[in-house]
Image (cartoon, rainbow, N blue to C red; front, side, top):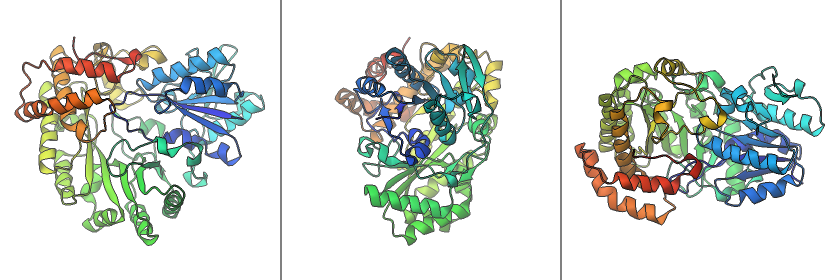
Length: 500
C-alpha cells in the first residue's frame, strides 16, 4: 500500500544529469520514521510516470504532494495535478518556493487543494495524519486550503530545529537513477542539506522572506550522516545543497576535521558559497577544505557591473571575485562554478557586456572556472527588486499557470510581458550572447543526451569561441541552430523562440 505519493515535476534540462529530489526526501522524514509507505514519482527520470501515478492512485493514498519552483516546473506539476483529479478524489498538496511565496494564487487553481507554506517537514507530517483521520484541517499550522469554495489560511508554523529531525530517508527511491547536476567529479552524487537560510539580504532572493535566518545541523551530526551514507550506499561524492554552508567558519572547520578524523574518502561540492566569504577565508582553512575532499564551489557572482552589484545589494565586489578566482586556480582539482544573471531593471547593453567580459577574464585566469549559462533575471515576488520591476512596468502573472511560462535562461515570446523594461536591442543581443556562451561553455560541463545536439554543438564550438573572444556578433545564421535545439529540449507547453 502507498500511503503518500510525492511528485517531482519535470523541468527543461540540457543534459541527462538529474539531482536527487531532496525536498521530497526531506518532507518524508517523519512519515517514513512512523512506517508510512512513500512513493516518489519523478517526471525527470520516469518516462512512464503517468501510468505509474494512475496505478498508485488506485491504492487510495492519503494525498499527493507536488513541489515546484517558479517557472516551467509549474506546468509539469499542473499536468500531474490534473491527472490526479481526473482519476481520483485524492487531495493534491503543493509546496516548495513558489507556492510558499504565492500561496493564495496557487490555491486558486482548480487542481490544487492545499498549500504547505514554508518548511514542510512537520507541516506535511501533521497534514497527512489529519487527512488520514478525516479531521478538520483548521488545526494544522502552516497550510492554506479550500473549504466550501473559500480559501482558508491557518496560523504560520515556527521554523524547525534541523537537529530534531531524523535523517532524510534516501532509501525511499533508487539513488542510481540520479547523477550530479553541477560538477563532474563522480558519476553519482548524493545531495545533502546541513543548514537552511542565509543571513545576507540580496535584493533578488526569496530567502530573506522564506528563511530569514540561518540554522544548521551540529558538526558531529553532519559527520555522522556522511559516514552513514558512505557505509550504506558506497558513494563517496556529495553536493551540499545548503543556501549558505559557510556562515560559521568554526562549524565548517569542525566538519572538515571530523571527515578527516573518520577517514572518509569522499569528494564534496558546495552550492552555497559567496566570494566575500572565501575572500576572508584563511589559507589554512581553504587547505583544510581541500584536504577533506572539496572539489567544487558554486558562486553567485551575478554581474560584471559594479552599479548592478549595488542595485541588487549583493554585498560583494568585482575585486573579491577576481581575487578568489586566481586563488582557486592554485588548486587544480577545485572547479569554481560561477552563476550570472542579466536583464535587471535599468541594466544597459554595455553593462551586459561587462558581464560577458568578466566571464572571459575569469576563464582566462582560471581554466577550471565553469560558467554554464547567463540566466535571465526573474522578478521574484516579495523581494526588494520586485518592487523596482513593478515601477518599470512589470505586470505580475494573474494565474499559477501563467507563472509557469517564465523561464530563467532564454527569451520566450512573452519576454516583454514579464520584463517590459528590456528593449528590442537588449533582447536581440542577449539572445546572441546566450547562444554563443552556452555553446562555448556548456558542452564541457554537461553530458548531452541527444546525439544531434552533441554533433551540432561540436561543430559550432570553434565558431562560438571565435565570436566570444572577438565580440563579433554580426551576421549569425546559427540562430537557426538555436531554434532547432530549443524545439528538441523544451516541453511543448513551455517552448520558446530564440528568434522573432
